[in-house]
Amino acid sequence: MQRARFAGLLSRTAISNVRHGMIQQQGWMSPMTRPVVVRSLASFASEQQPIPSVKVTKHAESPEVAVVTLTQSAFSHETARLLIKEWKAIEQDQSIRAVMLKSDLKSIFCAGIDFSEFMKGPESFGAYWRSIREVFDVIYSSRLNTAAAMHGHSLGLGCVLGMACQDRFMVANIAKPGTIGLNEVAVGVPVPHWLVELFAQITSRRHAERLLPLGRILSVQEAVSAGLVDKADFSSQQEMEEFVVRYLVGRNKSPRVAQAETMRVIRLNFLTMFRSTEEEDVATIVRYVQEEEAQSVLKAQIARLADKSRR
Image 1 (cartoon, rainbow, N blue to C red):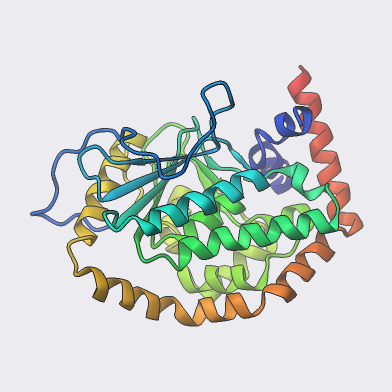
Image 2 (tube, rainbow, N blue to C red):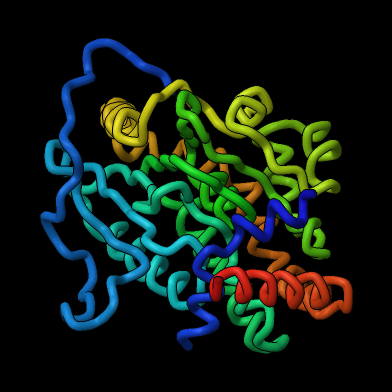
């Protein structure tokens, strides 16, 4: 059941890639409009080329808030490189105090690693995993106030991106709300040590023991109860995103330097562990991805998705 559910959501665009190459405080809330592009933080390709998998805007009414939007459900190596590039550009812009991370996909925030990345061999996957780690690092160590607005399914890496941010929000009051979780075990890959520790810090060690070894995917309400999601009583993506912008504007009212330094200290011990164990982490996950069990599951799911896409 978990494997089937995982395969159906992890990589809605994976086959295409294979085939084609918190607290509402009074006094600071004000009406917000939808974000519009007002600047380019990095040069993108010409209009004739595909839409970039990561788009950056400044919020129209609150330009101190950058909006980073994912446009592809599966997270390729190219997407990882682009997100790193754009995030570093945001960090250099001193007019920006906060980032809302979101997607423009219908029912998915981020469905996880593109299946095709698993199948490119140990050297390629090792390089890809280093990029994934860097994506996490630039977000988790950011000087900025960060919030993930996860309107849809947030599986595997989608959950990781949310946990890298300081706050996580989802939409619960709709007919088919999203789901969230670290479901690596469902495809025969153990959850990396640093992700286990982070999940346990955000929720509890007991939640980590009960959920992670089963590859459990949580409903929005279960995620709120576990402390993985901070607020979810929204009836639409727009309502959530407008709240998140107001929330970030409220956090931005604290003195810039003191706030950033305090957050740095709070996250320092985890970051020290994370960075010091990179080589071990990369070697471990590459080894397990190449195991027969994981490769068998991955190949079966890619074949299933390819067959489904042809129907």
